[in-house]
Length: 114
Length: 116
Image 1: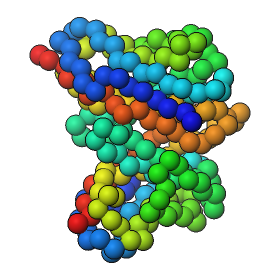
Image 2: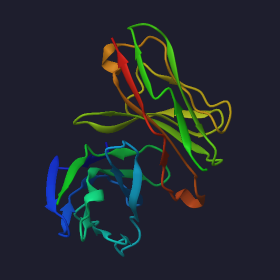
Image 3: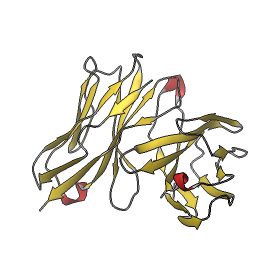
């Protein structure tokens, strides 16, 4: 069965610093998609970034980038120049291509300190 | 405005009293899904639908029912709620791209359900 593991339940970072959230997954398939979603205190789920497994280039979205290590089954999220508005729960998610079943991790609660 | 709406946003009910949480999207998305969020467990998929009249179980379908009679609506039904179904529920929708590509899911605002 596919699993997604986020081993850091809570993290904190100083404003303007860089932080990396870890995510590992387990699958026997070779084609899949990975996502990071952000859930601020408002509870609204917002897509941060998406990675397609067959693309070797790491995805980036402004201050957010991923380190995708396919062989290690690792998909970490790096947030540069952290802002107070980045304070949120972050979820890593996975889906195998050709299926419609998403697997989410347990989340990492990130607090950005002023 | 493109959005996913859920109703009600908050609900307190008693064990065994049937309830329905509605979900509607105005983006003409084929794919819709229900999740529950519990502390320490993250989001877990309950049911999903690839299109009208096509639904399938997620990881935690026990105690829930769904239907997809129209493309825009995907209600979640609890026939006989129990306290262990107390949770935060999210509905989501997305386009299904060709060749199995996956777009982002758009999430509703969530429904906080308490079963006494």
